[in-house]
Image 1 (cartoon, rainbow, N blue to C red):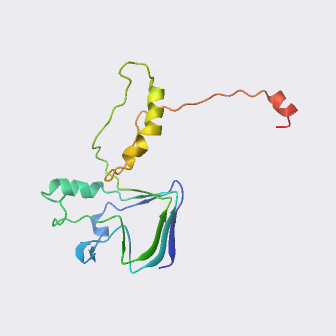
Image 2: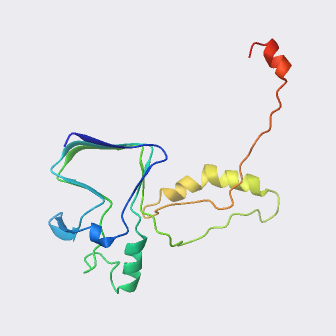
Image 3: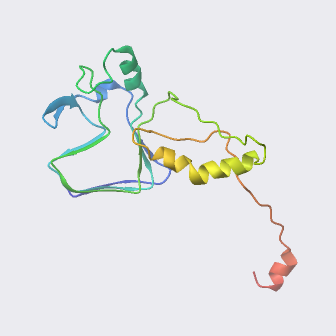
Length: 168
């Protein structure tokens, strides 16, 4: 209780790929595994900052793919939850990005101009502004990423003598 976990911008709290780091634990009155971050009967807990909490779940997904029925709730092969506050109050999560990364790509979506009127730079900008965040907000999406990204840029030449004359 009465604690703040602050994750700085650019920092990542990364879950362990070693299954032994998640011992068996009863959560919500059911058998499970220790979560990456958890508290029971806690008060005034905050997780703040501009950093990332990444469950790093690839080894768990590898196990699930090898085990029949393991992706169904209640299976005999539980996976740890990322963040659990059990019977706790006054919990704040602000600014952090939470992702459960799997290195298995589930789908690629290709954006292009079928009539050739928009160039790749325009299409990239459109996807960044209108599509990428919307996809990332879909429940169950761990991460949405843009490959072969192009960005608008600008080259500026300064007239140094003019800047000096303007006291800049």
